[in-house]
Length: 174
Image 1 (cartoon, rainbow, N blue to C red):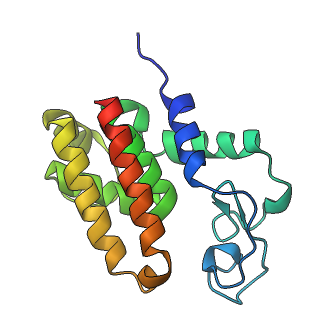
Image 2 (image 1 turned 120 degrees about the vertical axis):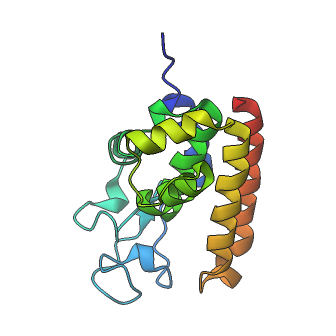
């Protein structure tokens, strides 16, 4: 019998995400994905206007956000098929940087082509590696990527605190 880890993991994820924000300097808060492009709708529970431009972000409930995270992130990234120590890392990376980008970090960690799609070849390689090694490599690729982003100086410390907390979670999941 497989245990559904999503309820535990979504609570962790939501601990990283804040309430409603309409910071005009955050490109994710704009429906066009760039500052000043489209409508300023904001972000709530980490659900952002640039990804969900038709959604009423301000009125979004926690339960609605959870349903979005399960459908659009957990299920699409195939997190339920991953080792526990890896599943939350991929979920959090997918929410923070997109499924394709987070999948590429995991694929690199597993030693397969990094096309951003977790399929049968990726899953087999992931299951063949030690989950702890995957967590280390995944977060190494994630940190390297983030330090190269133009908004690193503004958000970098927060991102690193998030990843540090995720490493503590990985120890619990191991």
